[in-house]
Image (cartoon, rainbow over all chains, first blue to last red):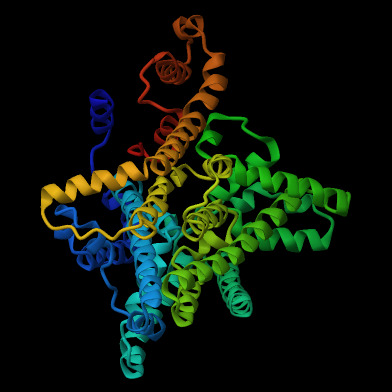
Length: 176
Length: 331
């Protein structure tokens, strides 16, 4: 096992693909990388990691998300049966976040450090947590006024970015 | 749900396909070699020429490899960087379509391009619907589900999702896999999951990382359906209780450990044993020791024989090909 790890590390010189030669690819992948970093930070902030270290896994998994969803809040306030339903939905949501976050993180680390940066767009866009994170971020602006100001900004950024990637991604080699 | 997904899908596809067509036809010339691969002079059928001129915009980079694989199978070492499920689906659909249209199209490529493009986009529509269902199951919110679907349909890799790439197939299979694990938390059938994993492994190399999703049913089983909710106070007693929970669910956890092992076994078979038996079968010690006048030829032989005669298990053929042709650092 040690030998395998040594051989893998020997072959890899981290970040050596970030050269001027690949500047166009780095630029096209940069916004996605920034979103990914924000995603990692917010997931780590969402969970109380000290609970995990203390093996308080039930409390860890019952971490509550900031939500404007009234149906879940009503469930929480009602009967014992509803409380159990709420608890289950919370654990399912959190276990999904943990599983998909791990999947996302492995993909992100491998692509950013070991492969060409522009592949990041392809790999991350197949992780469901990416879309759920973005929708949660937009959904945080509960009031219509804020949603129009900041949510609209995020949405328009997303649309512009996808249009630009559409134009430049396959033809990005033109600019190298 | 169905109406919303369908409407958004068609609107966004029309917009992005038009954008790509206009951009590629009038602005981007550079390294797009799809034009060189299609001989338009030989095409007499006007409809076929129009279809090819339209689809050539999506016949770039990896798409060329997928279509080549669908047409001829694994004919050179470069092909081994691509997994076989997507080309296989294109191949069988193209054969079926060929029976329907007969010899109306002079170029075999036209049918393969149509099939690749249509399959990819149909799968994209399914992905949008499954993402909607997944988000609705997790958040119980229609607005968020709609937002997720919309974001998926305009994501920065839209160009990949409308082209002939295996991303759509991979995402479709992985979303179905996630839904199967989340919705059907306790009663996951071992055999069906195992068969499904093999199919998943045939789509993309990154399918191996989906093994992280196995923890969902375990977590849910241990912490929700357990008879008693544990009030964990101190570290030591927590640990003891945690072990007790694990012991009580050992059969269930064991089942998933077996599945994860199968996952890695499938990956190992896909990336190492299958191509190695074909490529390295052609090499013998005589080939390795024979020197040729052409130095380039000698270098290629040296490179391959070093790989084939190296008994180190940490090397796999997939990584060898990735390093050779595309990403020097990819492992």
